[in-house]
Image (cartoon, rainbow, N blue to C red; front, top):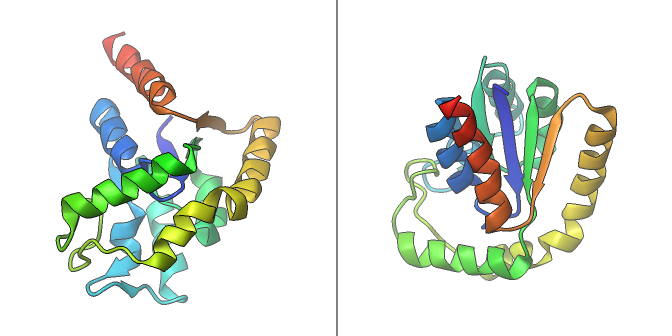
Length: 175
């Protein structure tokens, strides 16, 4: 696997997993947040974003993390594997609160420069309702990908499964 997409709810640990996996495999790391956002939390334009995504997805190898469901159709054709972090919503909520406490007022390493960590009710609502509003369509897509058998699909539901997934790469490196 040379092109791995990592997706899931905010706070599920996408960037953490991507960073760890990149360190294990040596594959380049792409945090989509660093490419989508511009200083001051300015979004990429609707004309510019698909072009950026196509350029990133066309690279020869990478670990790419981020949701951005609207651009998944541009990323999936290039990917060898998709990792979906399907953690419980309470865990995602706890993680975004911890992240906010850790980085409050500062820009975290996986975010674009000039975008200090922030949190508001709208964001917390998005995280809390993700499992019911966004997950069903993603699960349907992942099941379809699994049935087609053209891409490796990993649905990881907790820290133990994430650690086991990473251990397979550690074992591969020792061979």
